[in-house]
Amino acid sequence: MILIPEIETIVILVPRTGTRSLKRAIEQRYPRSMMLYRHMEADGVPHGYDRWKKVGVVRDPIDRLWSLYKYLARFGLDWCEEHDTTYTALMRDSVCRPFEEWLMCNERVFTSPYDSAGFGRFFPAYACRHPLPENRKSQFMYLRPDLGTKIYPYDLIQQLHHALDVDPPRINGTSNEPVPTLTGEALTYVARWFTWDTAASRALFPLSEAAA
Image 1: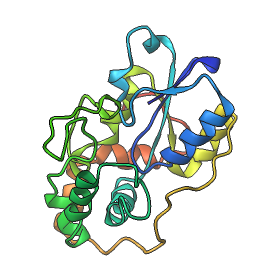
Image 2: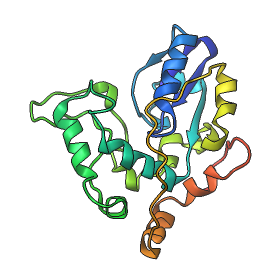
Image 3: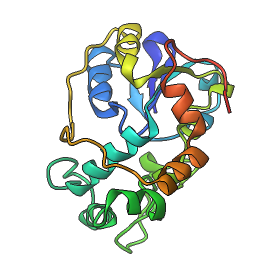
């Protein structure tokens, strides 16, 4: 979640929707911007700032989770070396199985403020209201269009960049390896948890209303 006082806008950062490059571009364009939380949901906007405009990106759920799966395989090695090594090792370990198995069975939470290394530390920047595994966490929970968030499909992310007057480079991009063919059981799983995500990501214009 990035607060941009210059344009009274809040950007909700859904994992694997181009957030890191967008964050850097916003920091360069708007010196007063601040990232209070890395992946806080729209219902966690601090009191008072909830009057500002909220924007975010929705991505096809299978593509997003496939991207996250590939990303985690090199997490703490090729990118995000600044994180605690215990945490990054746990994330890499979580994807040491086929994609479909991870998609349907993963229990590891990606974003949490609690210490993975057992030292009792707390990292407030990683606090969120709904600490669920990403393979069961609809982007609706991040973006909350029913709270007024203006949503841009990932394929039209340039429209968000234009609205924010930024031009982010591509950072932390994973390989172009295609999504493995999923079984009917896996597709049923995706349909059960991510019906809204699929519909929203295919919209041809920015969304502003819930379609649960």
